Image (cartoon, rainbow over all chains, first blue to last red; front, side):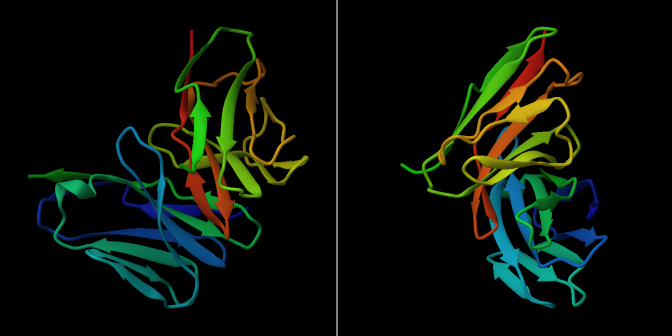
Length: 110
Length: 110
């Protein structure tokens, strides 16, 4: 079955620095979604990418979908304490199911 | 105030006991999902339902059962056959593949 791998599992970032988390699928995806889960909370939808090579930005967050539609990345610039949490990618293959990566848990040093 | 509600927030199960987790949504979504989240892991799909009176097994359905008698409700029963039930359980509903999560139920075994 479809597997989605996400690295790194943990990211410790100095406030103000940039970082990137990566997501790779074993199969071609119809779309990829990103979610954020704050500590003690539930996942919240951030964005969906559908097109090959698509790039979308949300303020300091930049999301990219690979040309082969098998990988994706999330880049955060100038990290802030509000960025703390776990970021999940989730891949879909048009069957109403999402396969979630294990997540990247981000902590920020002030 | 639209959204997804889950109850209870915390649930304790004794050995050999079945327990039922509630999930209700007023978003008028057709599809609903149950996930299990363990520390350091992503979300694993237990069951999903695309329409009333129909549901399918996810990746880890053993030891769980569901029903979908109403569009708004998708309760999950954790049976005594589930030998390692301690986890954070998340319910979600979706439209256009974007998933909206409830606040979750933490199940602990006494």
